[in-house]
Image (cartoon, rainbow, N blue to C red):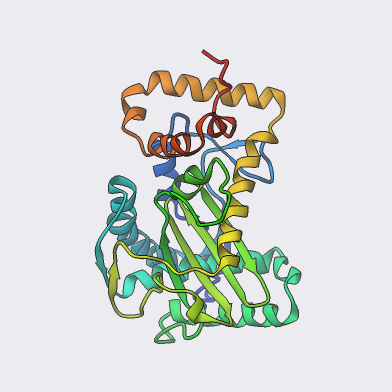
Length: 305
C-alpha cells in the first residue's frame, strides 16, 4: 500500500504496523490456556492479534522495531519471566516509550477521538504529537515537558482504603490495553502491555504528583521501586480493570460456552505448561485475595468439569 509515511513524511510503500508491538500478543498467547482474546468494544468476536495500521515506510518500521526488540529482550522478558527486573537502559528506552505514546495519540487523532477533549487538552495533544514525532525522527534532543513514565505492575496486594475488583491481578499482570486518559490536571496516553504500562503525558499540571516511573533521556535503571501516583490515576486504573472484567459479562450465551470450552480444553491439553505459566500466577493471586469471586470473571463456569 503506497502513501505518506506518518513519521518521516516521505512517499513510500507503507508497512502494516502494530500499535502495540506484536511480541506482546505472542507472549500473551503463549502463556495462556487459549490464544484467543476479546476486545471490550466487540466482546463476542475472538481475536489473536492486535490493531494494525498502514502508517510507516520500511525504514521507519525497522527503526521502531529495533527499539521494540531492545525492550522485549531486556525489560519485558525479565518482568514476565521473573516478576521483576533490574536493567540499566540507554537512549533506546525513551525512544521506545515515545514511539508507543505517539502511535496511540496518532490513532486518536485519525479517529477524531481528540475532539472529545477540552480545547486546552486538544491543543496540548497536538503539540505533543508534533514534539514526539520530531524526537523520533532525531530532530529534537528530548521530548521536553511531554514526559514518558514506565510502570511495572506485576501484581497488586492492596491499596489502602480502596475496594479492589476481583480481577485486579489479571488486569495488572495480563491485560493489553490502550487508551487516552484525561482530567483537568492531566492528560496521557496509556499503553498496557501485560505487566508493563507506558504513560505518555501530553498535559501535566502537577508533575511532582508522579514519582518513580519517569524515563530519562540518556540512561537510567529500571528496577524495583515505589511509585507515587495521584489518587485520580489509581481510580483510573481500577476503572480500566473493571471494564476489562466486564468483557466476560457481556458475552452472549453462545460465546460464553465457546470461551468456557476453549479455556477448559486449554487447561487440559496444556496442563504442564499452564501450571508454570504467568496466567496461573495472576489467577492464583486473585483467588488468594478474593476466593470464589475471582472465578466469576473470565474463567470457566464453576460447574464445568
